[in-house]
Length: 173
Image (cartoon, rainbow, N blue to C red; front, side, top):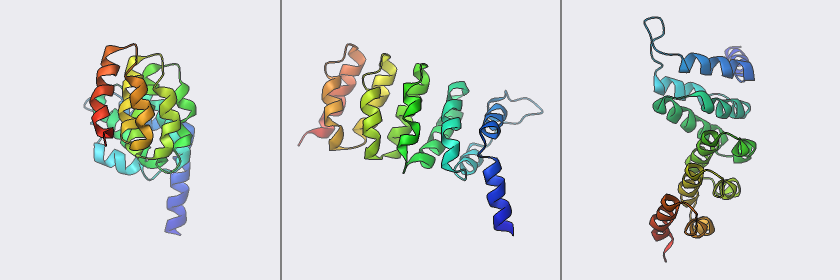
C-alpha cells in the first residue's frame, strides 16, 4: 500500500504544472518566511522523479538565476536523462542561448556518447557561450568527439578556438 502511495505521489509531481510550481518555490527569494532550499535535499527529490519531468525541469533552467541552484537542477536533470538523452534534443533548439548552453552542460554530465548528435548541432550554435559549452561537453565523450574539437579550431570566436586547442591534447595518441 505504501509503495503505491509513493508511486502516486511521485506521479503527481511529474506533472508539468507541479514542476513549474516547484521551480517557483525554489527560485523564490529567500526571506524569513522562505528559508533557502537545501541543495542536497532538492537533488535527492528531483532524482526520484521520472523522465517525464525532464523537459519541464530543463525549460525551468531558463528562469533559475542562482548558479548553485542551477547546478543542482542540471545535475539532477543529467541523472534523469542519462539513458535517454534524446529527451533534451528539442530544447537544444531553444531561442534563448542560455537554455541551449544549459542543455549542452547537462548532456556533458551524462557522459552518454549518444549526446554527441545534439552536441554537434550545439557546437555550431550562433552564440559562442553555447559553442564553448558544447565543445567542453563533447570532449567528455571521448574519441568520438574528435570532429567537434577539430571544427572548433576554425571557429569565428577566439575563445572557442583556444578552448578547442586546449581540449585537442586529450585526443592526441
